[in-house]
Amino acid sequence: MSRSRRPDASPRTRLTLRIDDLAPGGDGVAHVGTGDERRAVFVPRVAVGDEVEALVDLASRPARGKTTRLLSAGEGRVAPSCAYVEACGACDWMHLSREVQRSTREDHLRRALPASMRDLPILLHDTGASLGYRTRARLHIRASGGRAIVGPHGVGSHDIVDIAACVVLDPRLDAALAPLASLLEGAHGTGEAHIALGRGGRPVVELRWDGVLPPACFGRMEKAVTAGVFAGGTLYEGDTPKPAVIGDPTPEMMGADGAVLRLSSGGFAQASDAGNVELGERVLALAKRGAGSKPSASVVELYAGAGNFTVLLARAFERVLAVESSAAACDAARANLGARGLVAKVTCADADAFVFTGSSKTDVVVLDPPRRGARKACAAIAVSSVKAVVYVSCDAPTLGRDLAVLAERFDVAAIESFAMFAGTSHSESVVLLCRKPR
View (cartoon, rainbow, N blue to C red):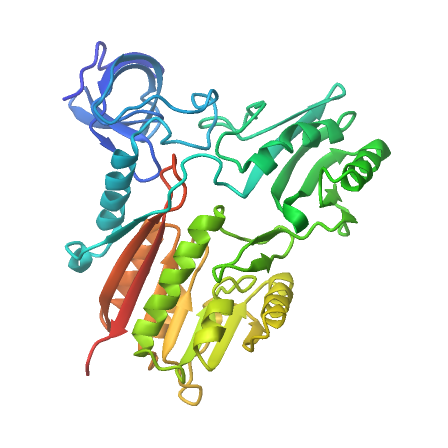
């Protein structure tokens, strides 16, 4: 039971809280009594069992707290590996042991599933490295007075944390932080940079800038590419629709088939190459299981991106149709298939609106939607003749919602969870569903 020194006090009240649970999204949850009401208080960067002194805003719903002092530590708390962990808004679970992270992710996934699925077994995959695993990241930038600050947003804010190093970035990207800041000396405004590894394992950057970029910034980027500091860059300034392209700014990653995958600039890709390979292996294995291991099975992949799973499916099945709404990603998918000598049909279309018809019999659907999920696509799948579904998800609540749409027509054959983002509350999940017998 949580305790409060002044339970009926005004907002931003200093309270003593005991953390009872960790909520999806990473925050800890405590409870306080205010008058005749029992209120939940969400507190970042805490562990179950922690007793903390916190400033609490009781006017917000839910109430929000900020720890000012740790009074006693819960059992799962460990010393974080990062000097910026208290300020940085990225690695929200770096202060928790790997065992606690693992069990809490499983609990959050199980709670998000429809009630009929919550007792099913979940196979947990631990992808290994806790540090130096991110091969792409999004950073925020503010420049004024001749100096640029590059870093992540702070905890619960849009303030930029000025970091000298990031322990979860691949060392090649970590080494690019200081050069990126120096490129923007003399600029004025704010921006966002997507950094990744490109050709030869050198960093590439896509910069979208709201403000003024002096010509010297472009000149420095040219010199940095010539010197091999960056493989290339794509620079958008203000409302200019066409960016400045310097060098080869194409991001690359280790594809799910173990070969290099070329991506569209700014397009989606998993943050960990090693985790992506393991995820891809399991997606392919479950697709084969859903198809009954028949190479002649017809497979439709929705939200296919640059072909990360497509290059696997095209090796295993004779008929593969990949659907993706981004034209640049479709071009990248075709190029990745061609580089491997593989054949699959890539269609630039809205996956949410894909129509499953009787004439184009589909045996297996593989879908990897964005965080918002795939409610419309699942509704279409439910009333189709599709035999099996492999659903890849980065968001447990929308996964649970969409599985409820499929539950009347499909049985769950497997649920797997991948801890691809060590030190954070995020994970990837894969579910195999097979159509119920008539």
